[in-house]
Image (tube, rainbow, N blue to C red):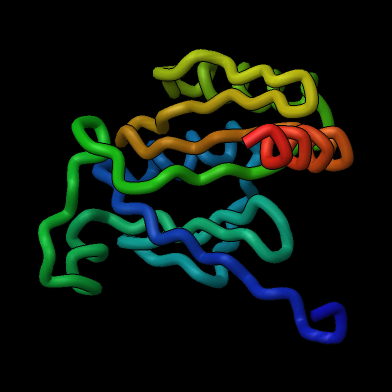
Amino acid sequence: MSNQTPKMMFVNVPVRDLPASIAFYEAVGAVRNDDFADDSAQMVSFSDTIHAMLLTRERFATFTERPIADAREVVQLGLCLTEDSREAVDAVMARALAAGGTEPNPVQDHGYMYGRGFADPDGHMWDFCWMDVAAATEANRAATAAA
């Protein structure tokens, strides 16, 4: 797999207020890319390979005939991005909360893995975590052996 071009991830996010959502995601560290934007959509990037397409609910509806869930009421999936340290996770959370996000779930601290999550103004859940991969692998092996 190392000879392949890294895959890119585009998460399509239906939003009620596009300008407010753009401001929120910029506040938590995403960078806007105006090459992929119009009055109904804005791409924001967390890295060279991880992007979110903020789409008005009307624009999002053009991609599906299924109803669009209200993310403040139901959870469809969880998204998690890594950070380089516990402090970096806490810094993302501080920015999210200052920008109007909420922290609906408790901090997850397993020693080798530390994570926190926020809900954006539309209720979409994003988690950020730091992990000591070697310690997490060893903990998983120990748990598997004990089972």
